[in-house]
Length: 472
Image (cartoon, rainbow, N blue to C red; front, side, top):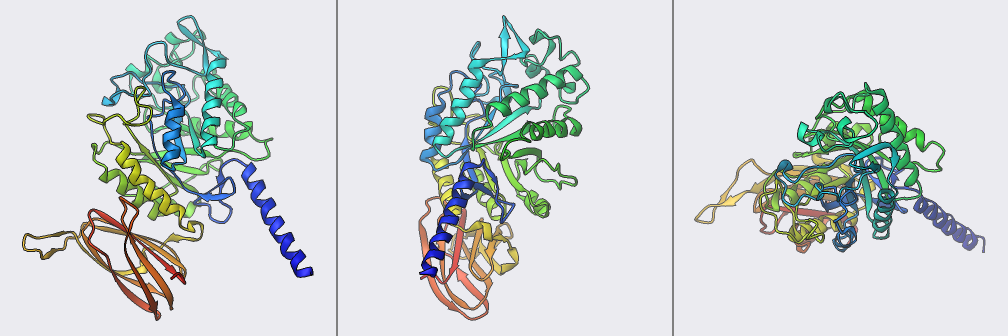
């Protein structure tokens, strides 16, 4: 009887712990700080999302957009707060959601005639922001709210509420390169006040985290200003039972973070291919995110393979910038033509395969471990007579829970032979098609300690291998 009572108490305790975790905002997983805990479950974040204008563009139907994310099983969207916007010609983006039509720009600061009052807030903006976050939450979608954005050129500065010509407060006289430095004390104070307002408005939502500034390495943004805004977020939430996570955009590509801000839990990188940023910063025990893709033309291949490469390197966020969303096509059905990146329904199907693959792993217990693969031969292509041509252009990445589970991702080639060192046991190996999610080849085997050679089926461009011990 006591054993039954003890078992029932354990179940109740676990249920209570899960319920408590479910009440907290997205957080760092307590057992592995490289991943998330969301609503009581381990999580990685995957999306193929619109160009960050869902809230600030009054013409964008974000409910239809969020329905598309849910349909694809994506759990992330990135949106800008409205302290920055673009004009329709910016960066060659066709039907840019971040470039609202005249008089359709919604800003957190209230309008005073043709200008903005940086000391007053727009109630309609905060109603839309909160509804967007709530609608996302109903669909299991986390919102990365980017508070500020580097102002890349004078043309964009001419549109910005923080330029003195555009506000009634007379701040922003020193130019765009001084807007995120702290030297303009009044402007900085108004920025801090806005951050506190946004944090207060969203304090009840569990599906939000804050990115301080998009691409601060452009446009004169200083480390001191960035650190100050992180401190403002932390101070604004100091009395909450659980704080929201803060993300910092570190660089384009990869770099090593020498002195991470203690308030920052997520290190974001843009265009992080190859995913060297993960290995460079893994020892910091932070979540590492691939926060924006693009500028590789319109084919699906680079964006699909970047996602697989990043997760198998040990990353936890993949946010593909998808140019097929527009005001006219909020479901992402627009054909991508000359925009500086890709997107569309087919790519999203392929990224759903990646999301489902990751969700099927006990990734919290896994670590990057490329040493598992002792030898690998990748046939990159076949010659005209059918003989193999081997070239050293493929990459192989591995996540492992030693002795229990291994996943290997091969980027490049048409056939692969891998030699893996495995402990004694019975295993199931499955070669997974990264475009369809279909298991193209399965092999059950009993392994003595040592090296096991596994041969893939024929494939195109990339393939994933999943090995589990004790599964038949």
